[in-house]
Amino acid sequence: MTLKRNEGKDVFIRRVVAYFKMAGVDPAHPDRHVNIDKLIAVAEYIEWCILNKQPIPDRLTVRG
Amino acid sequence: MSPKDARTFWQNLDHQSRNRPSDDLQRMLDLVWSHRVSHKNKTISGANADVYALYNRIFKNWSYTPGGMMGFLQGLTAIQIPVEVQCRIAAIPGKDKEDELGRTLRRYFGATRAASGFAQMSPGNFRVLVQFLQTDQNGHLMSLLAPTFFHYRRTQAKSEWRIYLHVHSEYRPAVMRWVLANIWRRAGCSNAKVGGPAPESRADNIVIYLDDQASTDLALQAIRGYQTREDDRKQFEHGVPRTVREVPGLVGVGTGAEPPVGIERSGARLLLRNMASSFGSYRQALIDRHWR
Image (cartoon, rainbow over all chains, first blue to last red; front, side):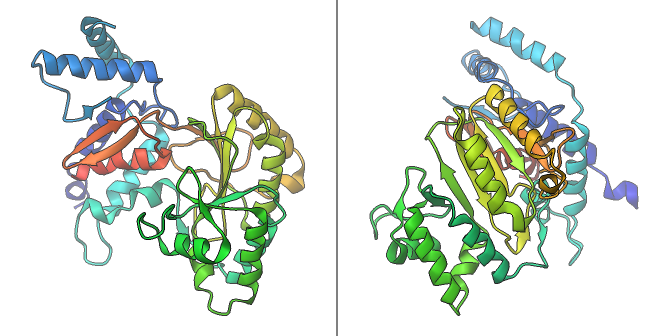
């Protein structure tokens, strides 16, 4: 019963951790975000993915 | 940075970052997971879990009384700085949207719209409001004021750092006056807000907005000095919002850095926008996204 209730929990935690990282918050230190330069670098990478028709990690979109 | 450098950065970031959440975040996610099951009808849905309430440790304040709220507001009347009451007020009545609290403060208590969009009141007008509440038998206006925040804005600077204080309700005006006299006036502090003894208690009833880590460290040093006296230390309650870093050696004091961008929902997507954001709402949106 407990196992069934927790089915999907690992996926939930993995996905939230991925969202935190993609949004510039280190899940290991959720009290702070990465600095703006790093966030811009992430945005530039995603932009590069778009320009080069590469898959964007998940579906998080970054705009200026 | 070239796209190639950006890609290298991304790969390094992914490689360097830990894939495990912090213990605090893990505990919060455990709670969100268990709260997704409704105790009423046993349905399983992300909407059952109030992520923001879990973040802020919100609980029912059984000791809430209008009298307690009145004492809190009277304590704030001693502050000779214009106050911004957190609500929606119209700059042009009939054209802009406003809520009931904003409309009441604008019509009867001389409130105007601040740059933040909140209702700004002079210390004199705020005193008139509190005097009115003492004689108001209805209690409706008090119920509108109870859950809101009272901001003392120094500058319009976009501050990324926050200090969260968890203070007993009866001591909040006194601690707020100390914050305004000892931290707010220094360079690096743009705003400080305080919440009253609302029907729902939360772990961040005073929040100080600071520019950078250096000004945050200076403010923490001042708070450490304040809490050295046992009587002053007792004014604080244990616990800070989840995912906020609790400052070791202090009671009910935490720090957090707000993201330099905001998150906006657009259908199934989350967009990062160049706008102000809230520490708790930002994290809430990221957790809530799983369910959508």
